[in-house]
Amino acid sequence: MKINTALFLLAFGCVSLLCCKSDNSTTAESLAKNELESARKGYKDQPSPMSATALISQLSKKLSRPDISKSDRLSLLEEGLKVSNEQNITARKGNFLFPLIKDYYSDGSTADRIFNLAETMSQMKKTSAANVLYTGLVSHFPNFSKLDVAKSKVADMEEPIEEYIKKLGEGIFENPDEIGVNRKASLSYVDACEAFGLVNPDHDQTPEILFKAAEVAKSIRTFPKSLSLYDWIINSYPNYEKAPTAMFLKGFIIENNIKDDSLALKVYQEFIAKYPDHNLNDDAQFLIENIGKTDEEILQMIESKRKENTDSN
Image (cartoon, rainbow, N blue to C red):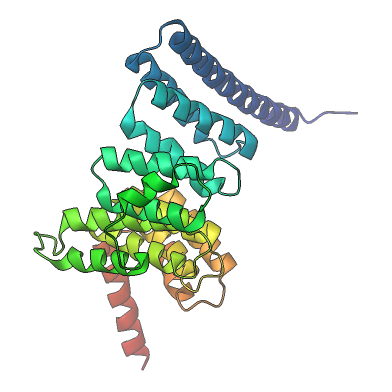
C-alpha cells in the first residue's frame, strides 16, 4: 500500500501541533502553579506587606482563570483575605470580600464578611457604601453578634435604604464637571448600588439598581466597573427585562472602549444566539458585519447602500 507522503506529513504536522499546544498549556499551568507556591513560601518565610502583595498578585492571577472550581475559588479568596488582614492591606480586602459575599451568600460567614466589608469601606472613606452594608446587616442578620455596632453606625438614617440610594443618584447632576455629571457623587452612587446588590440579592429592585449603576459607571468612563456590573446582571438576573440590553452594551463597550474586537464579536454572537427576537438583534448583526471598521468606512458603506437603493428606484 502506497502512503501519500504529503498527506502523511500534513497529518503528522497537525498531531505535532496539537501536542505542542497541549504541552504549552501544561507548561503554562505548571509555571503558574510554581509561581503561586513560590509566593506562598516567600510570604510564609518572611511575612511583610511586600511578600503579601506578591502572594495576592499570584492568587488574583489564579482566580482569573475561567476553569477554576467554585470550591478552589472559595479557598483562594479566603487565603487572599487572610493575608490582606494579616498585613492590614485595606485596599485589597474589598477585592476578596466582595466576591465572597456575592458568590457565597448562603454560607455561614456572610454576616461577618458584610461587617468586615462595611468597616473596610469606612476606612477607605466610602461612607455611602458602608451605610448600605451596615443597614443590610441590620435588616437581614438580626442575630449577628456585632449587630449593636452596626446599628450605631446607621443610627441617624431614618429613610428606607431605597430612598437613600435614590437621593445619592440625584446628587450625580449637582455641580457637574466637564463630562456633565459630578464624578465624586457618581462614584459614591455606584459604590452604594453595588453594596445594595451584595446585601439584597433577592430584592426586586436589585437588577434595576445595578443596571443604573452600570450606566453611571459608563458615563464617567470607568469601563471595567461597568462591565462587571453588566456581567453581574447577565449571570445573576437572566430573567430581568434589561438583561439582553446589558449583554449588548457589554459588547459595545468591549468593542469601542476596550478595543477588543475579537471578544466583542463573541459577545455579539452570544447575544444573537441567546436573544434571537430582541429588538437589538439587527443592531448586533450590523456591528458583527462591520466590526473593526472605522466610522468613515461605515458611513461610506451606508452612503453607498443609500445610493444603490435610490438608483434602483
